[in-house]
Length: 93
Image 1 (cartoon, rainbow, N blue to C red):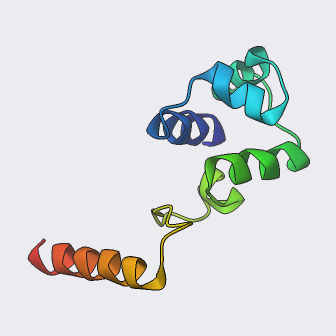
Image 2: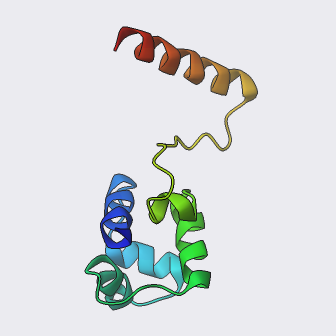
């Protein structure tokens, strides 16, 4: 459900509703309403939310169940190292 996923991702980023609202140019009440499933954000706002939280709209809508790690700003070599660590963890699990 969008409301739950939005709250989950926002909290995982260490953001308050106020901080997210400020970045999106909306009120805290709007974010609260989305998270409490009182109203749904517009399609345009959903795209803005996804961009702000560095996830896809499909992820927020639970159409994509993959988990992503933000690697923007890392070099290809650094990303390669992270991928090797992930592969190691998967092999052990």
